[in-house]
Length: 274
Ligand SMILES: [Zn+2]
Ligand SMILES: [Zn+2]
Image 1: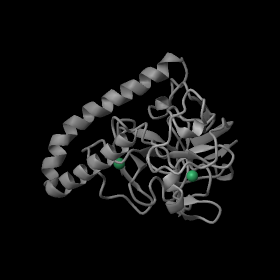
Image 2: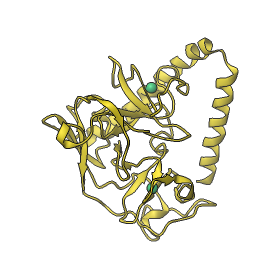
Image 3: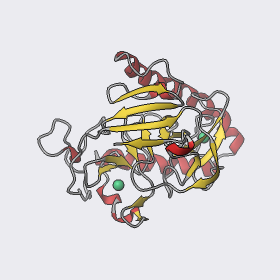
Image 4: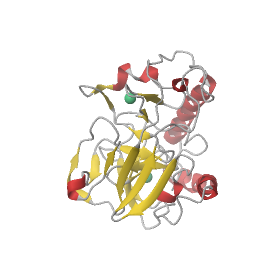
């Protein structure tokens, strides 16, 4: 397991070196082809999983990618509702010793005392996100939901919005950990979802805008034009007409630096209950 992380970092370094070394137009031309095939393959896998249970279908393309075995997704009024227990679809030390999905901590991991506990989340994601008049800051707790139903948290730790520095060592192999009441979550790229293709859709922000892995589907490169909250706009597999979206990054804010869209039930924005 530790080897996997090291490989990922190694590949990341290689990619950055390649990015720095290559002329932009050349890189875009060559990797665009590779990336399309990767994107289709991964999408197919997710759809396969999605169709097998008979749920999560007849939804807008992005929402159809939620993984059936872990989520129940349906449209209700102006919202797409994602029901999930929030438990990960992968192994972790945080399942607790004796659990079938338990894996021993990777070397150097500082396991926190919390155990993964099923929740009763209902995420209300706007079907048609509305850009807010100004960017709002993300709160502690869930700020979005991944395709496997595990919530996304922001770039801070509780209770005083301190940087994550002291929590990072407690992340498992897939960059997740549970908080005090057992809510498992990702502050960083959800590594289990992006292990085969780092450009895929990984989930949705509460404001209704999609979140992608660290690379662009268009050219396979790390985006260089992200705004201060990790967002930009272009065409993706799920949004052929283009859409504003966020990307996971290796540096702060990691996922979403703020909400570009409307949040809060009163204004028709996204919210969740648990
Ligand atoms: Zn955390
Ligand atoms: Zn993008």
